[in-house]
Length: 108
Image (cartoon, rainbow, N blue to C red; front, side, top):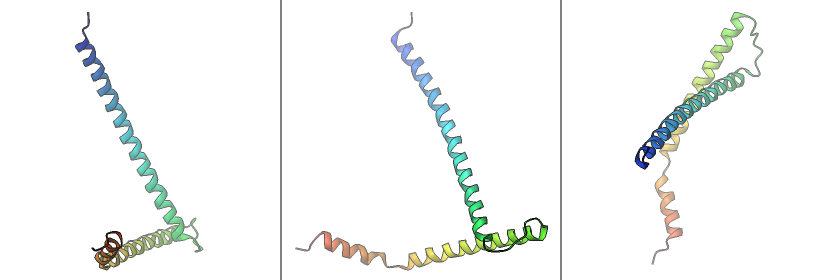
């Protein structure tokens, strides 16, 4: 006859195996979602960088021009992010918090 301790051990082992499979499945699912998001991001970026230009994608030169335009657009985007981050760091964030604290906590 199976006692309660053995029954609990079997249930715990089944639960651990179930959780391991679910976590592994979830990890793969999240990986696929991230990959899909990155592919869509690159695709939308490619469309944004080549829109408004009359590039002939049926020729090798046209495709090469589109790829060069995309990488130039992407490089400019990284440059803009670097500039934006640099300007945000230069801001004086301390005075804003001091003024907010003075409004919230009045001096006695």
